[in-house]
Image 1 (cartoon, rainbow, N blue to C red):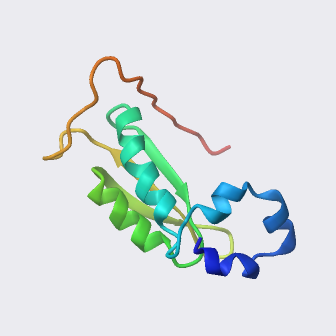
Image 2: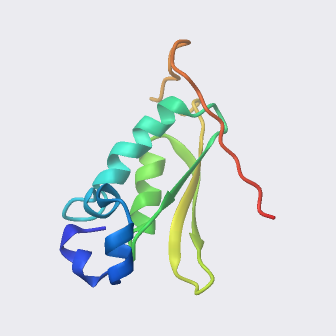
Image 3: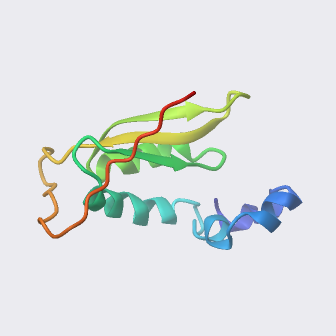
Length: 115
């Protein structure tokens, strides 16, 4: 989230969320996404899934950043109240300009199943 909006959060969120999660977004709130997405592409196995929780109004920009970082099928997911809250994207190494990591790089495939 943008640093300037920190004061708009409920007190319990400001007190319990990790400071880096709240303050790492820079002035536009997207700095963490800009760092995490390229790094995730180096760690995920082909077909691996990236899930990024987003602040208010950030999902569209995070989805664009995901596709620019080499992810495919970026989709915005909404919470029970209909608010855009997360971006999910799939890593595919076959895209032009994106090289897979070397054999020494650990790869992780993360998945979750809804109950």
